[in-house]
Length: 115
Image (tube, rainbow, N blue to C red; front, top):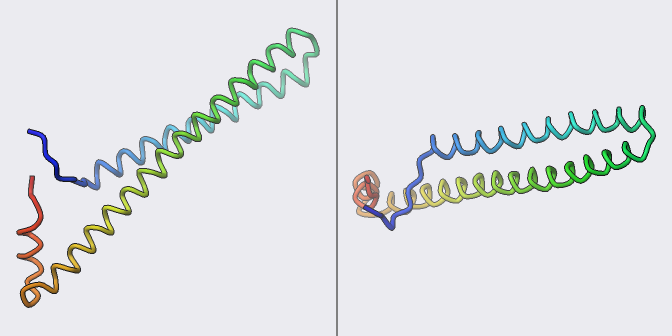
């Protein structure tokens, strides 16, 4: 059954953030490793084949950096979304605390879906 209610589960968001961050870190490590290998080859081998190889590696590095930046944008978006949901929840609790003589617990519970 589909719901039109927005639900936030902190463990799921934290897991998603950790997963995306892990991918970003792994890509950074891969980029550094490939750059090191490319620099070693560039310093050791001077030939048209080496130049072609280095150009291909540099193309790969550029694409990988762009993908890493997209993952960073996803990570930043998830973090921002998490903050927005936290702020909305805090605002709802704050507003509910002033209703019906401070019955924030029961008012907030009545207005918050459980499933």
